[in-house]
Image (cartoon, rainbow, N blue to C red; front, side):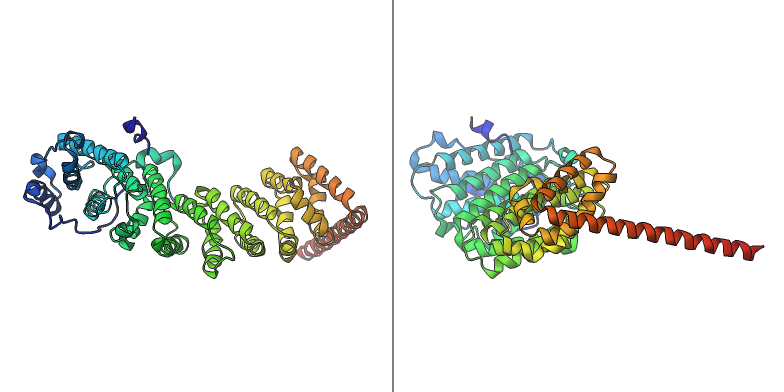
Length: 473
């Protein structure tokens, strides 16, 4: 059952971390493992692992011997194998390590009520660092396209060393979540450097690894309060780099999912730091081409802010208008979806501050030749809260959107858009008949003026053509 549970999840290594030298307190019985580790650090050639030690199973030794054997197994798991250049090398040792990793994970899960001593936490973090942060084999990585991965090509971005890495991630998750792990002791080893390297791994191309990292970061943020400001600041910096420098990162969706939970737990009133995060990070994230990769998570984060502090609605809506797509219809539909959710959490006072530029943008969407954009804009009138906001400010909004609605009803090429437009016009007519008639007269006058101007210009051009023709004779 345990193996089946572990059979489904994440991957990748990152930059150099610690020098994972063995503890000075190791006894003579571990010399063989020490030699393996030192030779592995000095050369990438793992032929020297031929003397890889097979240790007895934890369940086969007495209670007094379990802890020391557990430490030996952790040290044994520090050996990192090559799964890329020569994947068929050291198959026996790889299987021994995989079984050992399964066993140490099971040991953490099934341990009793006693707290893990500091030596266990120290060796555990060393083993994790050796496997996750110091893995020298990066050749498996593919070129990451702008903004992340193409979902159709994810199968080609799976880390071949996953059979070991998955167990290491599972072990880290179990250690962090275990009630037997003392947070005061653990924070000495799961420190800022450890967290920083963990956050770097979010740029993994393997979705299984990103999924594990997301869960582990949730746990660390919840368990280690002392690290919370550092985690938020580091995530901010990574997102800044993504927005303003590279535009490339595989783990933005997972980052935002974690941030959504963090934002949900913000206390009121919101700190200025959190409001700046909204305006300087979350809103500019809308401008990137790869928005579809993380829009769902981004939208959730933004709406959390508006629901916590309704006064932020004006800031958010104006931010959306600033980055509103011009030639990308698919992004425009995403913006309209998000806008409706924001408007549902918007109060009248905030709506009135931004209703004029908002109405102009909606009118442009109504006039779109892309039927899905026009259709999605028309669906805004199906939302009772949005309709109520519009009704209370109809004298301002209706004159702005009426021309677009009237043109849709008479000349849009898509019949579904025409039908929806007729429904919206009827709602507006029933809401304020006098204003509706006034807008209709104004529209007809403007149309007549435009027609007269067009005829006048046509006559002017005709006269110019006659003059040019007469001069050419």
